[in-house]
Length: 130
Image (cartoon, rainbow, N blue to C red; front, side, top):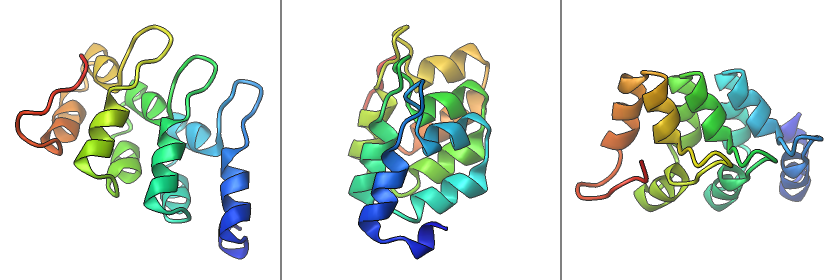
């Protein structure tokens, strides 16, 4: 469906939020629907993807928070593969209303492999807000 829309129409559709302020990307990430996430990621430019990934719902959660909370590692990877290290670091540092970052959620859940995979993408010497 997204391939039949113009870039502007695609962005408008993907920025729509439900009553909880979730976008389509939040919903796909929450359920670990990696193929849907890939479809969304491939439908937008990298700057627009960064904006989508920074969008917080009413609980302050980004799509990455949802994927991290359930250890959907492949979904996280699909959302972040196109990002620069700077954009990834910025997004990984976003806190939800409870003050949790993606690292907090991965650590609390014991998802060390996924956390290690995310951190390896960061350049040496960079830090995330843990």
